[in-house]
Every structure is written in C-alpha cells, then in structure tokens.
Image (tube, rainbow, N blue to C red):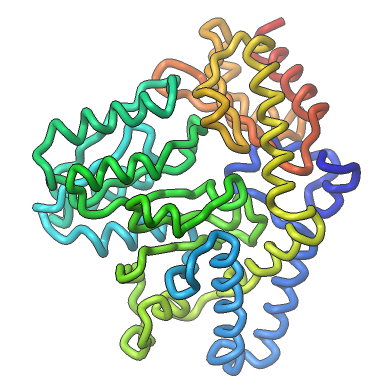
Length: 392
C-alpha cells in the first residue's frame, strides 16, 4: 500500500482484497462521515435544507471539482454517473435522422445502447463504428484507424463523435485531444468524451481538452476520486447548453443552464455535496492527487514488467497508454470453464473482487492499482489465479 495504514482509512473488510477498484470504487471513512452528517442535517429541517442549504453545498462541490480539473464552475455540473451525462449530451446534440454518429468498437455498451434506442426513436441517423484492433499497438494506430473511418465519409458527415478516455475493458487510455482535432478537421459537429474512469486516474486540464476540440467531457467521481456512489462531473465547452435528462419544475426558473442540473426533482443529492470532502481527503490523508496517481502508476508499471511473463499473457496496450489499470489477454491454454466462473470463485474462495471477461474468443484480465493495495496483494492474487485457471 502507499503506507501501512492506508486500508484502515476505508471501510473495506480486513479480509477483503479488491483488485477491481475500477468497477465501483470505495468511499473513505471520513468522506462517508461527511455524507452522513449532511443527511442528518437534511432530515432535521428538510424543507429548509432542500430549498437553500443544499445549493451552498453542491455549488461548493462544483467549484472544488472545477479547480481540480481547471474547468470554470459555470461549465461543470453534477449528474449521477457517466451514463446519465452521455444520455443528456446525445439527446441534446442529436435530434433527427440526419444526425450521424461515430463510435469505436471498444465503446462502453451504454453508449452503443443509447445510440440504438435513439436511432429507433428517429433521433439519430447512421451509427458508424470505427474498428480498434486488440491489442492496441500504439496511439498512432488508433489515430490511423479513426482517420480511415472519417475519410470514408464526406466532410461534415458526423454530428457527434463519442470516445472513451480510458476504455473500460480492456483498460486503454486513448489520445482524446488528438482524436478531437482530427474529428474537427473532418467537419464533425461535436466530440463527446466518456471519461468515466478519468478523474483520479489522470491529471486533467479541461481548458486544454476543450481547446483541442472536445465539446463535452464527463467523468465519474465515485470511481477514482473516492466520492459516494452516484456522483459524476459533466463538463461542457463555453456556450454549449446540455439539457438534463430529467426536466424539473425548477427548469424555467433557472437563469443559468448549469443550475438546471442542481435540482431534477426530489432525491438524495448529498453524494454531490460530498465531492469536496473527497478531494479534501485526498489532499490531507493521501498527500494530494499527484501522489496518488504516482503510486498507482508505479504499481501498474511493476505489473507491466512482471505479469505478462508470469501469466504468459499479452498486454492490451503499451505502458504509455495505461493509467491505474492494466489489462492482459490470457493464453488460450487456460481452463475456460474456470475462467467463466472466476468472479464467483474468487469471492467465495478467496474473498477477492476481480475482473476477468471474455471479449470475442479471448479472456482478458483487468487489474486496478489503488493506494490500499500492495505488490504482495497482487502477487498473492496472481498465484491464486494461476492455480484456479490451470496454470499449475
């Protein structure tokens, strides 16, 4: 771990080993205490809290996130998750059968499903899929594939291009700024980046990202920023007004479009109000985000150097396209039945949360680095994996 007592800062069970932080994250004790304190305050004077005090807390959170990623407060809002953000963005930007969209083969299924539903509703035209071969050889190979797909269509053909920043599975960091520039050069209307895993894994500068041609960028705060579940940031370039997926009674009263996201009907908004506490936790208890990122990068680099040989596996991409997760293509010789049931086996037998998924005919293992994990935790997990998958 980053230091000997880091795991104690979380509610994680002593026996529980989580090598798949990327799926749902976990919330530190101090951050949960802050959330519970707000919930108690809310229930002491519910009406006053919902009408007045809540807005002070949520705007403080928006400001804190904005400062972290260099995005003006008036261009960042909170939504429940990246899925909500992508839905809101696509439904704002695509409104007819003339609006064609571009995605990659490695897009998160939510993006593909949303586009298909909108296509059935007559809100999207053609869905063009750019093929990204696995494993990915380099950033340049991604850019070449993108150029090929774009130039196969007339200039201005695409209303919206949607890309992951860090692909969920296999975990690959894509060169989104170069990709956005290429799309805009080909006349694409808007570039939406699904950065579900980005905040907390990578240093982000929204000023640079917007300048490169990205119009909308979203990232979950409940994965790598240690916020409560149901918290994501949605950032849009200056002048672009994204409409919330839920239009509330407050909609017409809001003078600034971002305020329309602050209230979308009665619900528990306290996860939004706790993001600033999560950032405070990172700064005070972990020494700052740079230190967290450096630790996770060093753990991934160590895995990159040791695991391919140990598992006879192929990395999904070069090291420079990895952040806090590594994904490995396992050999065809593994026990396929054991691989299919690995998730259950590891929970039941080892009290370990892991991620092993089949993509096409191959099995891919994704391991998340995190401050509460050590090299020994990874080494023990790999030993168990080899035993279960028939390496020994």
